[in-house]
Image 1 (cartoon, rainbow, N blue to C red):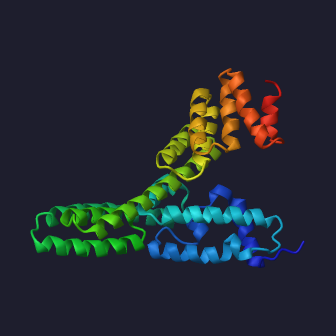
Image 2 (image 1 turned 90 degrees about the vertical axis):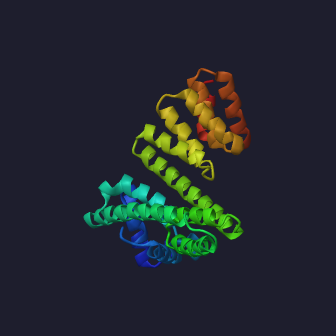
Image 3 (image 1 turned 45 degrees about the horizontal axis):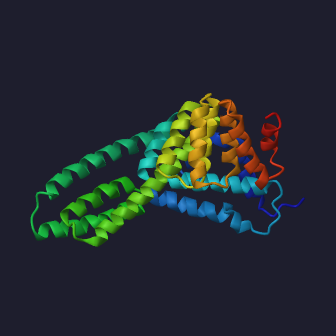
Length: 303
């Protein structure tokens, strides 16, 4: 079969896929841990041109089609995490041991710089809040402009600090309040994505207790989709906590009532709790929607 992808992209995809979870977010985007927000954004845009599935629509991809989709999803997740200073700091703390020496040093220096910036912003806030009259309004305007620069550079946590100070100085300016709400919302989305990604990593390595904690955090932060509640239910089952598994599955079904994998997880929890009738009900609902669902059929047969 002829694959309609340049040979260099084929080689990159196979190399990425072979390394699996051993490749860092920085390596996925082709940057070092010393990259700033602008470099991260440019790297992601360049990767998108090469690896976005839409760029190869209607092309013959063979077995690399699934690899391309999976690789781009990982790159998108890497970008979402690294483009936010708070989630990037969390990622660095959790993965520094696997970094190269140079990346580990760069991550450490950036962590120190972040602490210094937080201290500086705190001192600046205290000083500015003592100002009076028009000086407060002018300072608020300047802080707002600075916050926009911080956002553009992926420094959302710093931007939030700056915007909160600006709002205190000029509480009547709607522009400041609107931008603060927007940046806080984007920060929550990034933290949710980070928690979900970490949950998947930990589950894959068999660390079910910590994976469950990460999935729970993702759910609390309202991560999109059903991956977080499904992951939490799987980890609870792996830990032998059938009641907990049923609770996580039920929580997911409240938002995604048509999600068969959540119903199968709920059924497995009910089987563990010896609640056969409830398990049968869940499995029948799955089989009504998907008559050939292999796992549901296997679970239903002995009930």
